[in-house]
Length: 207
Image (cartoon, rainbow, N blue to C red):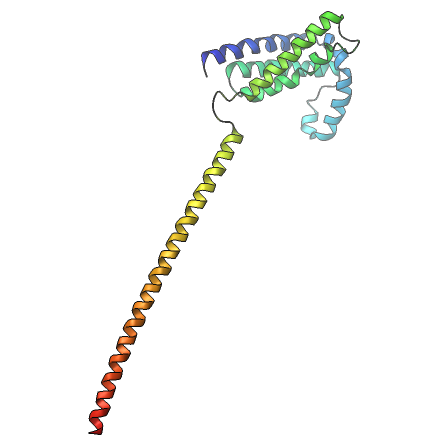
């Protein structure tokens, strides 16, 4: 990882770590806007997740805000250190849902038109930034490219093997044909010689 990438990720991660700690300590400012999301998401999660995981789900909007705050702290540290950075960046993007809902200028929950729009655009830009970070492969090919490249290599190897086998089969067939012709000529000579010998023997017997 280059120094520029490390510095950029650390600066981006610092916001999420601070913001996550703040949300964990005081979830109330985001709880109101997160309430509709909590009412929809939590019952769905309780139905789909196994019982062991359901036990760790938050009970209300405040708990969901604290959970997203915790995800921001963990995701921010992951992004800054580079340990599981792409997965951490995805978690950060998902964790921005309460902030985006709370700052949405198209609802009555945001504070003032100008301030609400600025806050919403900032949160939207941060979400886009971590989504870009989730796609960053540090100049290395991603899994999809490597899988496609591997498939192409295997395809070329298969074609080469097929061509080699075809050449060897044709060569073997040609050799068998030559051997067959040689054996036929030899058998013909032996038969001719045997016929001549038998003829001479018969002529000698008749005399």
